[in-house]
Image 1 (tube, rainbow, N blue to C red):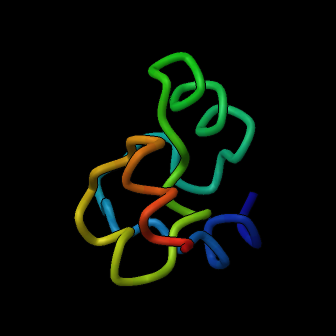
Image 2: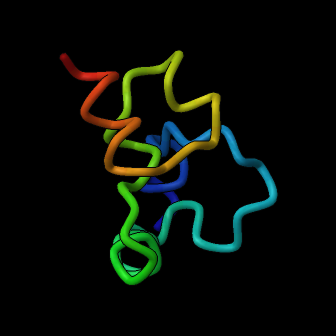
Length: 59
């Protein structure tokens, strides 16, 4: 968990799932979103985790 937390690229510092990858993926999947760690750095900072935002960011 310590390594996960150190490697986590999510900038939402208050996230209770930071470093808990399975919980993070489940949380965002249930909301129809993409976890922040999959976004390019600039797009991640928007906190918009929508699939649409992700597709635009990785094009």
